[in-house]
Image (cartoon, one colour):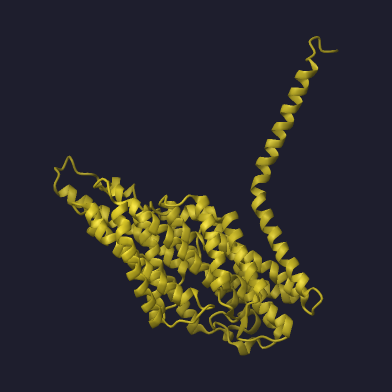
Length: 492
C-alpha cells in the first residue's frame, strides 16, 4: 500500500544527508583513538625502511631492520612516559598550556639528543652482564633484541596504567633477563644490581627531601613574611641563581658529553659563574615584575612562572641528551654486531640511529604524552608555580649530589619523588597549622581530624600504583626479556 502523504524529494534528500552525516561523525569518533597508534606504527615502519635502504643488501640486514623498528617503538614509549616528569609540574602549575609544553619539550628533547646526546654507549648497560658470557655475536644480538623489545613493552604498559617508570631501569631489567636466559644467573653482576635496587629508594627520597626543603624555605622566607613582595625581591633572585647554577652544573655533567668532557669540579665552577650571572640579571627583572603587585600569596606566582618554564626546558634538553641512549643504545649495539660480526663493550651511535631516537621521543610525547603529563602535574597533588619550581630545582640538584656521591639514581624517580615530597610536606604543614589553630579555638570551633583525613593532599591510589610499578620494573622487564629471548632463539 503506497504512502498517502509521501515526503517531497527535497525532504527525503535532506533526511538521507543527515543520516550520512551522522555515520561520518560516528566514524570519526570511532577512528580517533586509532589515529595516534596509526602514526606511531607509520613512524616505526619509516625507521625500518630507513634501515632497509642502508643495510637491506648486507648480511644481517633483516635483523637491523627489525631492530630499527623496535628502537623507534622504544623511543616513542620514552617520549610518552619519561618526558612527563619534566613538563608535568609546569603544566599542573598552569605556567604552560599542554600544547606549549609539548612543543617546548619536543624541541628541547630533540636538540638535547642531536646536539649533546652521547655518541658512545655501553652495550652491556652499566656493567650488569659479564661480557665474557655473551662472546658469541649471535647470542649477543638476540639478547639485545630481547632487551629492546621487553623494555619498550614494559614502558608501554606502565604508560597505559598511568605510572611513570624509569626507562633506564627497564633497559637494565631487559638486559639482565636476556643475559640470564642466554648464560645463566652467573652472568649477572649482582653487586651492580644491588646498587640499582637501592636507587629505587634513594632516588625518590632524595628528590622528595630536597623539594620539600625548598618549599619550606619559600614559605618561611617569602610566603609568611609581613611584606611578601619585599621578601620576594630578595629571595627570588637567589632561588633563580641556585636554579641556574644547578642546571649549568647538571648539563655540564650529564648533557654535554658529546660536545666536551667536563669533570665535576669544573662543572661546579661553571655552575657558580652561571648562578652569579643569573642573579645579576634576575634582580632588576623581579623588581620590575613585582611593581604594583598586591601583598598576597597569589601575587608571588607570577614571579615563579618564567623561571619554572626555563627550568622545564633545561630538564627536557638534559633528558634528551642523557636518556636517548635508552632508546638507541641496544639498537646501536645490534647494528654494530650485525655489521661487523662481533661486539665491543662500547659502540658509536650512528647519526641515523640518533635521529630515530630523537624524533621517536618527540612523536611519543606528542601522541601519548598528555596522559602522564596530567597525572604528574595535577593528579598526584595540586601544584602551583612555587611548588613546581621546587620540583624542577630538586631534580637538577639531586642528580648532581648523587653523581658526586657516586649513587645510582633515576631521574624519573627523582622528579616524581619530588612531587610526592612537595605533597607530603603540604600535608604535614597543613596538619601542623590545624593543631596550632585548634589550640586557639574552643572545643566547639575546632575542626574534626576526620575532615582533614578526607582531604588528603596526596592521592594515595596514585602513590601506591607508582611505587608498585617502580618495584616491579626490573623483575618484570627481566622476565619479559627472558621469555622473548627464548622465543627469538627458538625460531632462528
